[in-house]
Image 1 (cartoon, rainbow, N blue to C red):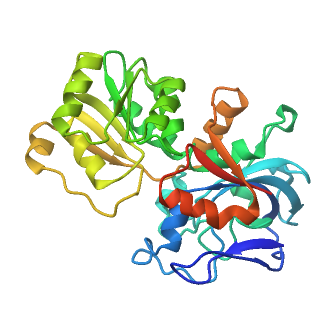
Image 2: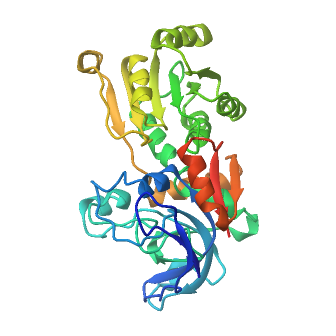
Image 3: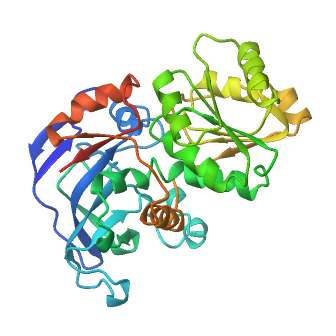
Amino acid sequence: MRAARMHEYHKPLILEDVPVPDISAGEVLVKVTAAGMCRTDCQLVDGYFRKYADLPLPLTPGHEIAGTIEKIGSAVPKIAGFADGDQAVVVGGWGDDICRLCHEGNTQICVHGKWPGFSAYGGYSEYVLVPFQYLIKVDKSLNLKAEELAPMTDAGLTPYRGIKKLRDAGALGPGRLFGVFGVGGLGTYAVQYAKLLGGGATVVAFARNQAKLDTAKDLGADHVISTKGKSQDDIRAELKRATGQAELDAVIDCAGAPEMIQLGFSLLAPQAHYCSVGLVGDSISIPLFPFVAREYTYHGSFWGNYNDLAEVVALVQQGKIRHNLKVANFEEINENLELLRTGDILGRAVIKF
């Protein structure tokens, strides 16, 4: 099979032929039909995760995977309901199935877990092995496009889980001002979830790129504000003019740039909630006194679990989610990784096999 593999850090991926993996009893062999391209893939190549995980090379990136079932292991129970040719998406975080986090269903944060796209096999290959319990079948009769399904496993999943946290914490609802920071691959979905889950909150999108802000407006944002070349005071004043309120009650940060986080915290109202899902930077610095004295709550939210993705897939199947995609060929992977590095992709890039 063809695979784009990482042999060295800070080098382009090598497009090469590798053996199709041998299936074991509890696994399913998935023929990859589309793989989303995430900025995390650039960070992987650029060494961002080296101090957090020892990843053996070569590895195959690609953790946003949609495909069809090619072969089913002998021990996969019939009750799972899988059949050859079924369309499916891959749940990203595979846990050890025995720890407290896995028992709670949060396998994506299992400390003994593993993720496709960070090991020998990932979505940047024609086939990938998946433990059967981490596949979600998609209704074939709906004829959903693989390139629209693949990004939902991360770009569409991660902000969904984060916004659910804000909702469940009581941060959203009528009369609340909800900020979406960053309108890239994750942010285009975050704007839509903000309207779906926000309970009537007013949604304001913040970004540097005007084309991305136009997209956010088209996807349902009530207001959009450009942060390019503006001070915190300028942005606060613009927020006040647009909404009548100078402070935000909740934020979902899909960028994760340190300067964006500092801006976001400077705009928070008392008892506001801030949720980080983006990872552009590697550390943050926020003023401690207002954090304590104004009783802010800061949420970290990572990827999503099986149930989160099942809910996202249901929304897609009901036609409630719109996509903003750049579809590319397998041979264009390195070119598109470079575009991701520079922030020059609007929406989500997807490799279609």
